[in-house]
Image 1 (spheres, rainbow, N blue to C red):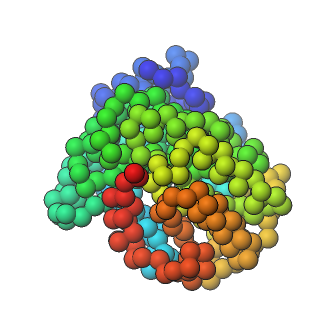
Image 2: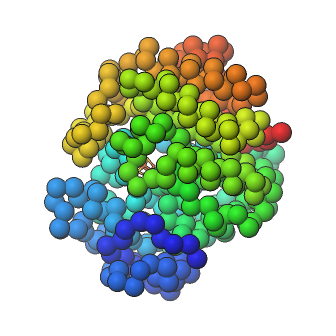
Length: 370
Ligand code: SF4
């Protein structure tokens, strides 16, 4: 069993989940001193009283094992007719995250959460996936677990990645995307994903990592982990999201890509995505309050028509183009898309209109590096 690499002040187990396989695994893996409480309903769990200054941060040190009562599978909440999006499906096996990035949208989306949750009935998601496959024969789907939580943040104590990999390996037209900022890959290395599991890393420059991505693995450690899973038979992809325009950003991101391409050959990268820093007014207020000294939250931004503060367009276009050019120079045609940007920005970066979300989703799901 891997070593748990985050702090846990308390574990809560909802009625009916105590005998689950997941609860048994977690109890076996957490340090002996962590108090375990049994509750009738996960909604009874309160925020820790000892940290009134940052209750959301304190909630990142409490875990709830509960039963998920709503479907596990849904369309990506970032998808909308306004954006040139990628037709992604989200599988929610956990919510909230023990890491703490200053720009993370969960600070607003899950603002009242007293803890992070994992779902004891996660295996029910396999029945939902079976129904999806039967409902659309011949179509390919890319399904990710990294929307409301980091896909591998809890894997040292839940081991869920092993069940997921074995399940997806059996389906030709499903691609699982495990999206992470950790280097917790040990559970993956001795399995055969049969080309159907992609592990993707969000990569940021060292300056962004140091000022904004608390308790994550360093960019160098993420790249080393990518190299290791590639050698173990997994596909790999990279998200440059959020790209943050600060003085020296272009130089730093080019350096980051150079470091990446030294370890992972361009032709082995399944795709890249890029997205500029964007925050709703509420998220911007929360983030600036919780991380008042983070310079990355104070760049030049404007309130865009979708109601989010975005990096001033010429600055983010410059960053997109710098990255696109660096990857193009690497000589391999790496599929690329922009996250939550309108088609007009896509055209200005790539010189062509984006393909429709469903088509792009299928292409990303089925594109295999050479
Ligand atoms: S790793 Fe991802 S989910 Fe976790 S805090 Fe950072 S941005 Fe949020």
